[in-house]
Image (cartoon, rainbow, N blue to C red; front, side):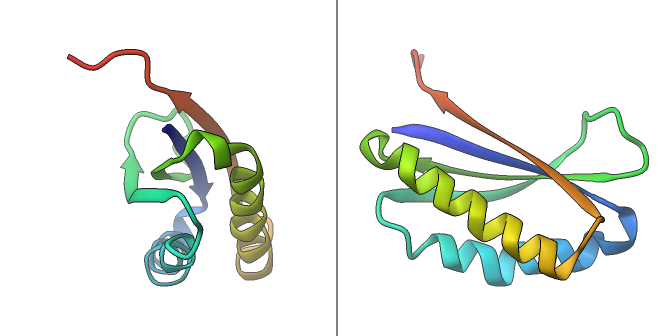
Length: 102
């Protein structure tokens, strides 16, 4: 399994709408993808930009599906945010592979 993280930084004026969109539209859409488990939305409290609000969409994805599925997910999220919140957000994705658990 790979942990997928999509960090979104939105302008404060759209924070509530963006959070609502992620919880009511994007997260249910992600549940439809094969191989995705444990979808979480978190607030990013440690970023350096005071003029934006950080949100992190995280979930586990099967390694064999990660490459293609992560691209599709980025397309879904970016297309939605470009349509609903043009020029009011940026995002960065990352994939993390578990090395060890204690």
